[in-house]
Length: 151
Image (spheres, rainbow, N blue to C red):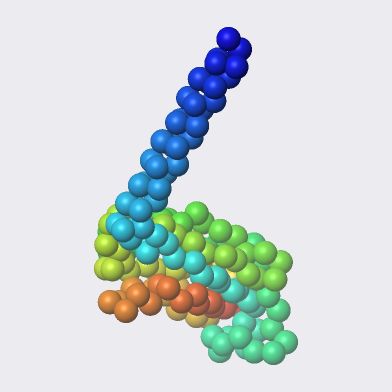
């Protein structure tokens, strides 16, 4: 009797696992076919003290940490679509955004930095990131923000 019970419970367990695998496979196919994964965007930002105020990162200019970086979805009028991030001691931050909608070919992001207290920007305050029909969001870029101390 116990072998029959073991066989029965084992069969039920195998059936549940098989059904779970099929459901997971179907969901995975649907999400990939709907191209939701194409809406993910990854890049990075770099902030520095622009000692000569020329808006370009030159040798000898030190990184600026603790700068808050934001990403807005301009096309859909949504702010902070990625988590706001703060640059590390090397002035670097990873940026990511996920726009949850199908067919994300018309996405226009803006990346911007909040100037820390006592600093003003020497670079454009907002940088547009446009996804064109070729899918330019597939390549990772670095967005630079320079700051000079207020006098």
